[in-house]
Image 1: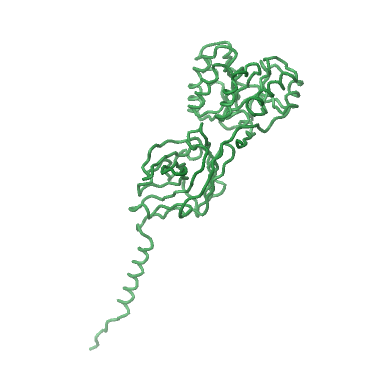
Image 2 (image 1 turned 120 degrees about the vertical axis):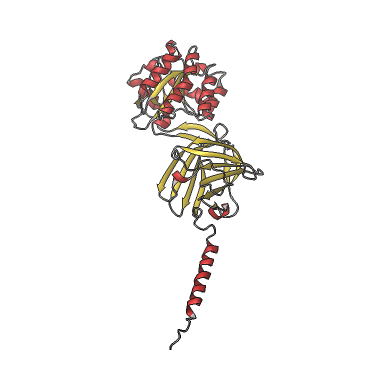
Length: 398
């Protein structure tokens, strides 16, 4: 009778297999968990008042699965954030990508040295994806913008985590892998804008749901109130100003520009069919008082002809009228001003209102509700220059 002899190779192979499995588990802690996003590059660049934040990953990151306001202490958190820490500060301000509004909003989280969240909010932003692995976030910075990033020196880094981990470090990563990169946020001032030419514009030819709020006949004692509303609502506007009203209100004019709004020329003395001196005089005062050279001109009462348009163009200014007019100068009441604007606003609209030239309490009272209603209907807001596809020009101070 033959006896089967045990095959010694079987237990050896099984043992080797078990050792290999154990090694694989050691290499990949947190079995079954997704690894942290592999960041292959990142940069921070200032362009005028905007921060341009770029991150490149080894594979496309699903924005909908990222948390815009994460608590990074939690192992389950999934996020992709740029962190900024001022010199000699333990706190960090984080701008985070992701969520259902990732294309137009960024999460804003501030944390202390122990990464405990101090505040959570969101800010207006623009997110582009030039290719599947590259994300570019543009967001306003500076003392008047809600990011809270003031001019100065910062250390910055990118933080990323996939979530779904039992242990946070198993699914979290930073870039650079060690330490942080240096960045200096510079204070800037608006000095001009592009697009000034001998052209008449009443509205922007666009299908984007965006409008421009414009205010005429200031600066006045009411202008500060309008700026307060715009600042609280995080909305830019364009102010067409009269030369004779500027003296003594230079600080208000500088505030308009510092807060990301725009100034346009509205003649020296509110003269219809103005000549060269009326248009050039107001432009010179704007530059003298603010350092800003306007590229937009608005004719008082909308009265114009080919000569007016050509004169403004010779001074580097495009002539701007409007296509939504609530006739607020006639004091029709707050409700009438509101109703007229929200009923007639459409993509590319240039909306006329007044912050000077008479009592403007009705317009000021209507403004918050106008903004809220249009925003609820999906509209955004831009200066006239931005609405027309042109750009404000900024230079560093000094």
